[in-house]
Length: 427
Image 1: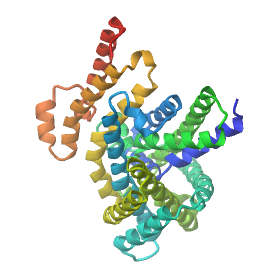
Image 2 (image 1 turned 90 degrees about the vertical axis):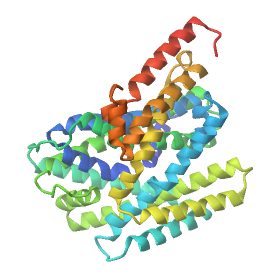
Image 3 (image 1 turned 180 degrees about the vertical axis):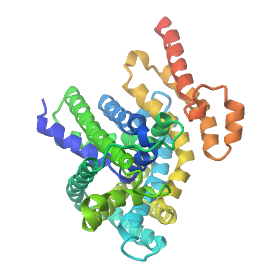
Image 4 (image 1 turned 60 degrees about the vertical axis):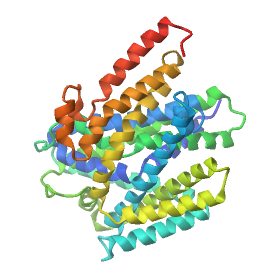
């Protein structure tokens, strides 16, 4: 049996890997716009930003493999294509977003420097660290995450006890589904299928003699602890945003609101420290994404160092090009990619945590194909072909909420299992 201390160490590692730029800047503005519906929107946000990612970690606990293993029941080719898509999206959107958040929170408030300059220097350093691996990033992560959490807890605590529980009227039409879709922007479901493999490798290196069940139990316990910590932070930030509805302009940005909350609670010095900590934390995340993507590409090209180098350079160039845009723009641009890849990712996570009896290769293939087909209208709606999506596919349940794939996927799961159970020898 692995010690309880190991559970907390692994839980902290998971929390650190999940807790990035999106986790910091999204919740407070969500609460600000949610008003008196803040609790409903918190539940929706937690489904896609906490529950699904933690289920992804539980799936890794069951598989104890890599990202490739998530789609292996569909086909080896699908697994590779899916992995390439995941890593391509990672270096194109969440990685550059870390530079944008750093500019808006840690550079722009203090120095008159262009975002082009910030993103160029930022990803120049990312490339240096990716090409010259160092343990300093891991050490920084262990120091930064507790420091950021401490400041956020102070901000949340002071805000909650400083304002009366008087909430404004919500500006959001469908708080629950809006919360779910906003949770997509954390990229944590994608993060779960990627970082879960990293955790598996780490545990295997530290505990070479641990049994499959020991490792499974460790990852499960650590996953739920990390999930609880994420939920409490989100709950506090959303509530804080909802409480200050009269103190900020209705058009305030995500980064401006988080900075404003910190200044109101801890003063300018507190905001300065948070900004610096967020900037360095974002940097370690970007290095992790670029390095992880380069490692994956190298593994597909016979461990070629040239493939690693080309990927790291490409990821850094993409980071400069996208990172010079503001956070709001990157979030808007990310929406179509998320509407395309998130439904498939969620389904793969759910199927991989489902007992083997109900998750045959046939079920995997059928449910994934149907999910892909019925998520197309949501994808079209996200690229400004809203009228086409609404008029043509309005008959699909939940389609107006951009969740048109949910019911068809569930029905196909049930039907396929009924057919499969009747034919025990079916594939």
